[in-house]
Image (cartoon, rainbow, N blue to C red):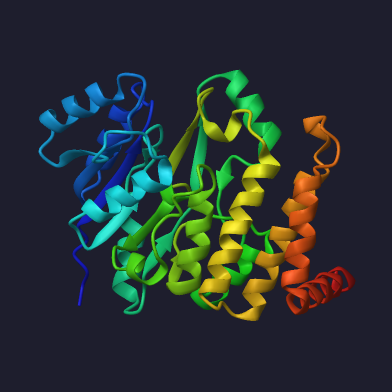
Length: 317
């Protein structure tokens, strides 16, 4: 039976007054977009004013906020959008990004081709607002396209993402059935950064995600001075929190050993990075060193297996 895609596009909004109108219009330009949900997260600029104007201007746009009116972060705000979405299919778009033409064309074709499909991931590109933003982006990233470098079947996607080295995908390029959140859970709200990457892992573990266009972008990430990805923050600390969260999630959900091991290795590695973070100028972090030792002592068998797998891969390479 042919899928008639009606999509809820969730746009979390925080301090994006300059860009959110462009994001909304790019979503409304897609024939599959049935509704655009602006989930506003207590911005300190005039984003709320712009969102209210967009809601009045377009019948397919609705504005929602957290019940307490406070700032809760991207994870909680995306969850708010997901819970309020009314369509069977769902897509995300950051408020400072925008969709390209025919954003959902290939995704719709794939949903029609496969009965057991939960989602489709596709490439997104980058556009720079100024030279400074471009230079800072290039100090973190070596590519102007976010994508996977190889096509894999859904059963192998989670392992590929955890092994690393083959790229990743962005929420801006993801189209899913809303029901996938019943399988994989919602965004981790304790993560102020990287909750989108964690969701990739969650969905790849419990859902069946198929590759769409991996060489041609379906959306554009707008890079500017306000992007968190190019702002100054403790990269080791935020990455450590990401992998700690994923490791706890893996243990709670009893993930397969071949998926728990790389998560555990990443978890230990980033604790170690925090321990010896020379950029902080504080020397060895004794508290984090204790945490590292305790994690090894709590999971000795997993630690031995993780080390064995690590050295096996190094030998193979």
